[in-house]
Image 1 (cartoon, rainbow, N blue to C red):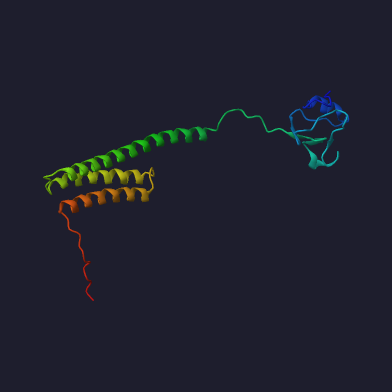
Image 2: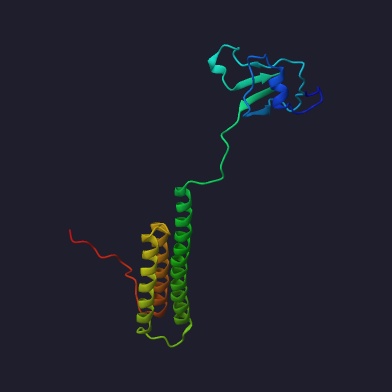
Length: 188
């Protein structure tokens, strides 16, 4: 039997305090409605809604304490679909990381080559051709990364734009490209 100072009520004492035709199921768990609630067997337990109500099945109340049927026991086993999804996520994460790393590496190579060309005193316009090939490879890596969904297409477009702008800035600095100051007038 639980005492007035006992913070917990055992299921056996709850079953013992019920009238003989009504017994609490063995799979009940206890949940305190108020933290300051003290339990005592002097209060009778009764089903919510009365003894004859079928809606009260599985729920019992006892002076500041509610007894609720417990969830079915968990076996600790996950469905096969969950395990498969976890395996797929691991493979995809590794592949996506590799694609992104390749893309970043190619972009860095282009930026280093452009910076070297910018600092070079006697640069020739033919040197930009090698950098354009590197830019093409970087574009290819960016497009692959976007295609498989490892990166959003707007992010891919932004990165390609960065490469093109940096190249254009070097060409303008060297005088190899002169932007058109006036837009061409359209024929009316």
